[in-house]
Length: 319
Image (tube, one colour):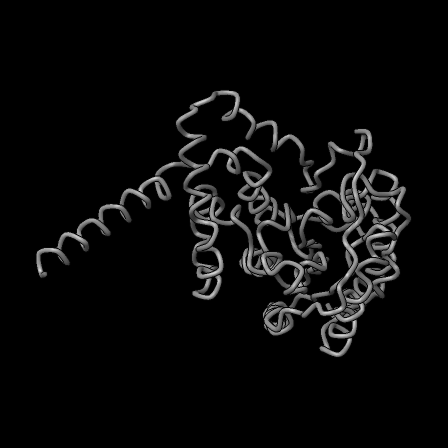
């Protein structure tokens, strides 16, 4: 019996090792050669920008939906759009920006509603498979931002991550490797992903209608409060602004959006605009209920400039 258990243990260790070797040593080119590879460059933008500066945090609604140059020109302040995609999860996004927050900075979070809705998609808060690629292949120090609960959540993505990592590595396709450079060229010097501005719209379906039993993630508000305290301790200012959303999708998701808005209003957090203010006509969206066309980007940018005006004036007064 002892020999049998020893063999079972040895077999388990061997299969685990064989499984984990590609996890640590095979880069997942499917994600590494994508816009995720821009993260270290966004860190450089943050490190090189003087303070006070404006920092934007969010998913693709922010990376694809702002004209940061116009905001910089309006307020004569450096602007860094740190956003890439919702894949990273709101939890990682805020922790990733912390080292770069300085006195006088204005930190703006505009997270998708997926970040708050536990029943819709908990990964909007904790992160997706792509976050594994970031912390193992693109930005290894990011592993320190992930707590035990988040590792448990990410564990379910490991099997697919390993399989795709092996697949893309064995293909050894040079064209796949070169896409990382083309991906980086999609961002401008402010961190905006702008190449879609001149591309034709892609038909898409609005977000599905709420069932009426959606639940909010109880971990989101405590995280945001903790982050707000950190920002204040640095002599900086945090504000939360709703993401833009296609009118049809907004109406379908109104039940949960209303719950999110009420929770934010009652939290004491600096939530400075109504969600309905960023509910825009369907014609201003490209391929998803959060992705704006260039005309939509212009409208959203003007709304953000207007909403930030009082915040920035107050911040300048405190200097």
